Image 1 (cartoon, one colour):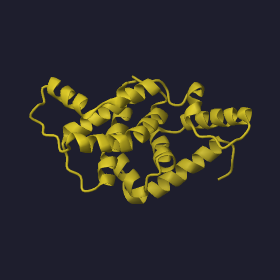
Image 2 (cartoon, rainbow, N blue to C red):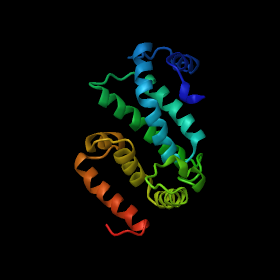
Image 3 (tube, helix red, strand yellow):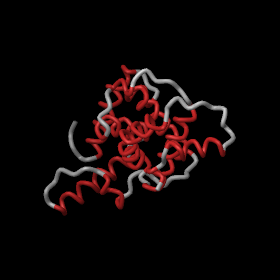
Length: 188
């Protein structure tokens, strides 16, 4: 499965692509630790963003490959993580533009969303309502909400990931929350 890609797999892919001259900035142990800390969250983010688990698998693999291929040095773990999420966001955006992934958030994928309801029927209805509402948001609004509330990213991290100004993130998040609340039939 693509979520189990190793450092060696990435290196092999890099050599096959004829880019052996690009130096990787991480050793295998560092990459494995970074991958273990970030892959699950990144895969969940991509799955929610694309609405397709298989597309998320492909995008996850491509994200780590491009991250390693870039060979950039990062000043901190947070900077490294933001760089990875930015690559993943751009790949998902590009895939959507090329229409290689199906529309975001279908009812059959609603089980990916957390539920706070105790009743199973109520929980299923809540998930369906939320997934339908999320599908009606613009891609950037979805990304903002997912990064802020599903991934727990700070405004600075969201700004770096999505290529926005830090001052814009608070306003854009407010508008996205208000729009989502309106779509769910609530008052903001």
